[in-house]
Image 1: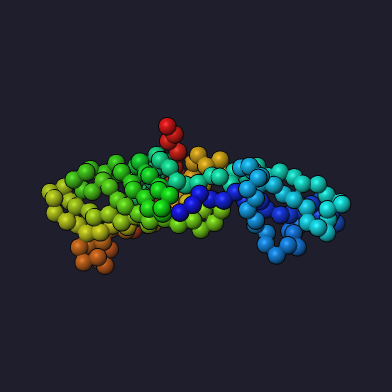
Image 2: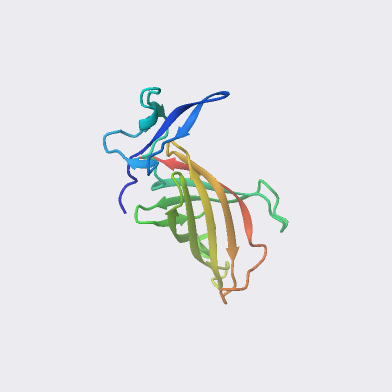
Length: 195
Protein backbone atom coordinates (compact mmCIF):
# COMPACT_ATOMS: atom_id res chain seq x y z
CA UNK A 1 0.00 0.00 0.00
CA UNK A 2 1.40 3.38 -0.91
CA UNK A 3 1.64 6.35 1.41
CA UNK A 4 -1.45 8.60 1.57
CA UNK A 5 -1.13 11.09 -1.33
CA UNK A 6 -0.84 14.80 -0.72
CA UNK A 7 -4.28 16.32 -1.20
CA UNK A 8 -5.44 19.72 -2.34
CA UNK A 9 -9.05 20.69 -1.85
CA UNK A 10 -10.43 23.12 -4.40
CA UNK A 11 -12.89 25.62 -2.94
CA UNK A 12 -13.71 29.31 -3.16
CA UNK A 13 -14.59 32.10 -0.83
CA UNK A 14 -18.12 33.16 -1.75
CA UNK A 15 -20.21 36.07 -0.70
CA UNK A 16 -23.44 35.19 1.07
CA UNK A 17 -26.23 37.44 2.29
CA UNK A 18 -24.85 37.34 5.85
CA UNK A 19 -21.13 37.23 5.07
CA UNK A 20 -18.40 35.31 3.37
CA UNK A 21 -18.19 31.52 3.48
CA UNK A 22 -16.62 28.60 1.67
CA UNK A 23 -18.40 27.69 -1.54
CA UNK A 24 -17.50 24.38 -3.22
CA UNK A 25 -15.79 24.50 -6.58
CA UNK A 26 -17.67 23.76 -9.77
CA UNK A 27 -14.89 21.38 -10.84
CA UNK A 28 -15.70 17.72 -11.55
CA UNK A 29 -13.54 16.58 -8.61
CA UNK A 30 -13.26 18.32 -5.26
CA UNK A 31 -10.11 16.46 -4.17
CA UNK A 32 -7.05 16.33 -6.40
CA UNK A 33 -3.48 15.24 -5.60
CA UNK A 34 -0.86 17.97 -5.94
CA UNK A 35 2.71 16.74 -5.58
CA UNK A 36 4.16 20.22 -5.12
CA UNK A 37 1.90 21.53 -2.37
CA UNK A 38 3.77 20.21 0.69
CA UNK A 39 1.88 18.78 3.66
CA UNK A 40 -0.83 21.44 3.81
CA UNK A 41 -4.17 21.59 2.04
CA UNK A 42 -4.47 24.64 -0.08
CA UNK A 43 -7.88 26.10 -0.80
CA UNK A 44 -7.84 27.53 -4.33
CA UNK A 45 -10.46 29.67 -6.04
CA UNK A 46 -12.57 28.16 -8.79
CA UNK A 47 -12.42 29.57 -12.31
CA UNK A 48 -15.69 31.43 -11.77
CA UNK A 49 -14.29 33.39 -8.79
CA UNK A 50 -10.60 33.75 -9.64
CA UNK A 51 -10.76 37.52 -9.90
CA UNK A 52 -12.80 37.93 -6.71
CA UNK A 53 -10.95 35.71 -4.22
CA UNK A 54 -7.49 34.61 -3.18
CA UNK A 55 -6.27 31.18 -1.99
CA UNK A 56 -6.49 30.46 1.72
CA UNK A 57 -4.59 27.79 3.65
CA UNK A 58 -6.27 25.17 5.81
CA UNK A 59 -3.89 23.72 8.38
CA UNK A 60 -4.65 20.00 8.05
CA UNK A 61 -1.69 17.68 7.55
CA UNK A 62 -2.63 15.34 4.70
CA UNK A 63 0.48 13.26 5.45
CA UNK A 64 -1.06 12.22 8.79
CA UNK A 65 -1.42 8.46 8.84
CA UNK A 66 -2.49 5.84 11.36
CA UNK A 67 0.58 3.75 10.48
CA UNK A 68 2.97 3.60 13.41
CA UNK A 69 3.41 2.64 17.06
CA UNK A 70 0.82 3.68 19.66
CA UNK A 71 -0.09 3.51 23.35
CA UNK A 72 -3.85 2.96 23.52
CA UNK A 73 -6.33 3.06 26.41
CA UNK A 74 -9.76 1.42 26.36
CA UNK A 75 -12.30 2.90 28.83
CA UNK A 76 -15.83 1.59 29.45
CA UNK A 77 -18.73 3.83 28.47
CA UNK A 78 -22.40 3.06 27.86
CA UNK A 79 -22.49 -0.57 29.06
CA UNK A 80 -25.65 -2.21 30.41
CA UNK A 81 -23.81 -5.24 31.84
CA UNK A 82 -22.76 -3.71 35.16
CA UNK A 83 -19.43 -2.30 33.96
CA UNK A 84 -19.44 1.36 35.06
CA UNK A 85 -18.51 4.26 32.83
CA UNK A 86 -14.87 5.19 33.26
CA UNK A 87 -13.70 1.69 34.18
CA UNK A 88 -10.36 0.90 32.48
CA UNK A 89 -10.76 -2.08 30.15
CA UNK A 90 -7.28 -2.32 28.62
CA UNK A 91 -4.06 -0.43 28.10
CA UNK A 92 -2.05 -1.68 25.17
CA UNK A 93 0.75 -1.14 22.72
CA UNK A 94 -0.46 -1.21 19.14
CA UNK A 95 1.35 -1.29 15.80
CA UNK A 96 -0.64 -0.27 12.69
CA UNK A 97 1.17 -1.49 9.56
CA UNK A 98 1.16 0.10 6.11
CA UNK A 99 -0.22 -3.12 4.54
CA UNK A 100 -3.53 -2.83 6.44
CA UNK A 101 -2.64 -5.25 9.24
CA UNK A 102 -2.26 -4.50 12.94
CA UNK A 103 -0.97 -6.16 16.11
CA UNK A 104 -1.85 -5.32 19.72
CA UNK A 105 0.03 -6.28 22.87
CA UNK A 106 -2.67 -6.06 25.54
CA UNK A 107 -2.16 -5.52 29.25
CA UNK A 108 -4.11 -8.76 29.83
CA UNK A 109 -2.46 -11.69 31.56
CA UNK A 110 -0.45 -13.50 28.85
CA UNK A 111 -1.97 -16.80 30.00
CA UNK A 112 -5.37 -15.53 28.80
CA UNK A 113 -4.10 -14.13 25.47
CA UNK A 114 -2.36 -10.80 25.49
CA UNK A 115 -1.86 -10.50 21.73
CA UNK A 116 -4.39 -10.03 19.00
CA UNK A 117 -4.04 -9.44 15.30
CA UNK A 118 -6.17 -7.18 13.19
CA UNK A 119 -6.96 -5.70 9.84
CA UNK A 120 -7.83 -2.09 9.20
CA UNK A 121 -9.02 0.17 6.44
CA UNK A 122 -9.25 3.88 5.95
CA UNK A 123 -12.86 5.02 5.75
CA UNK A 124 -12.30 8.76 5.33
CA UNK A 125 -9.56 11.37 5.34
CA UNK A 126 -8.82 10.91 9.07
CA UNK A 127 -11.10 7.95 9.93
CA UNK A 128 -10.34 4.24 10.19
CA UNK A 129 -12.02 0.99 11.17
CA UNK A 130 -10.18 -1.92 12.72
CA UNK A 131 -11.14 -5.49 13.52
CA UNK A 132 -8.93 -7.49 15.91
CA UNK A 133 -9.27 -11.22 16.41
CA UNK A 134 -7.78 -13.03 19.40
CA UNK A 135 -7.81 -16.56 20.76
CA UNK A 136 -8.76 -16.41 24.44
CA UNK A 137 -7.82 -18.81 27.23
CA UNK A 138 -8.68 -19.05 30.90
CA UNK A 139 -5.98 -18.82 33.59
CA UNK A 140 -5.63 -22.64 33.63
CA UNK A 141 -4.76 -22.92 29.95
CA UNK A 142 -8.19 -24.00 28.70
CA UNK A 143 -9.51 -22.41 25.48
CA UNK A 144 -12.41 -20.00 25.95
CA UNK A 145 -12.95 -19.15 22.29
CA UNK A 146 -12.32 -16.35 19.82
CA UNK A 147 -12.74 -12.71 20.76
CA UNK A 148 -13.17 -9.70 18.50
CA UNK A 149 -12.46 -6.05 19.10
CA UNK A 150 -14.03 -3.64 16.63
CA UNK A 151 -12.82 -0.06 16.56
CA UNK A 152 -13.83 3.09 14.76
CA UNK A 153 -11.28 5.86 15.25
CA UNK A 154 -10.50 9.38 14.10
CA UNK A 155 -6.89 10.46 13.75
CA UNK A 156 -5.96 13.94 14.93
CA UNK A 157 -4.97 16.29 12.14
CA UNK A 158 -1.35 16.36 13.33
CA UNK A 159 -1.28 12.53 13.29
CA UNK A 160 -0.10 12.18 16.91
CA UNK A 161 -3.28 10.93 18.58
CA UNK A 162 -6.61 9.28 17.85
CA UNK A 163 -9.93 8.79 19.58
CA UNK A 164 -12.95 6.66 18.91
CA UNK A 165 -15.17 3.82 20.06
CA UNK A 166 -14.69 0.10 20.56
CA UNK A 167 -16.74 -3.05 21.07
CA UNK A 168 -15.24 -6.21 22.57
CA UNK A 169 -17.12 -9.48 22.08
CA UNK A 170 -15.97 -12.77 23.59
CA UNK A 171 -17.35 -15.92 21.97
CA UNK A 172 -17.44 -19.48 23.29
CA UNK A 173 -15.42 -22.17 21.52
CA UNK A 174 -18.33 -22.69 19.09
CA UNK A 175 -17.53 -19.21 17.70
CA UNK A 176 -21.16 -18.01 17.87
CA UNK A 177 -22.29 -17.99 21.52
CA UNK A 178 -21.50 -14.62 23.12
CA UNK A 179 -20.13 -14.93 26.64
CA UNK A 180 -21.06 -12.39 29.33
CA UNK A 181 -20.19 -9.75 30.32
CA UNK A 182 -19.49 -9.04 26.65
CA UNK A 183 -20.13 -7.21 24.50
CA UNK A 184 -18.23 -4.43 26.27
CA UNK A 185 -18.33 -0.97 24.70
CA UNK A 186 -16.48 2.25 25.36
CA UNK A 187 -14.07 4.88 24.17
CA UNK A 188 -10.55 4.45 22.92
CA UNK A 189 -7.71 6.94 22.83
CA UNK A 190 -4.25 6.49 21.36
CA UNK A 191 -1.04 8.49 21.59
CA UNK A 192 1.72 7.97 19.04
CA UNK A 193 5.07 6.67 20.31
CA UNK A 194 7.95 8.24 18.37
CA UNK A 195 11.55 7.03 18.12
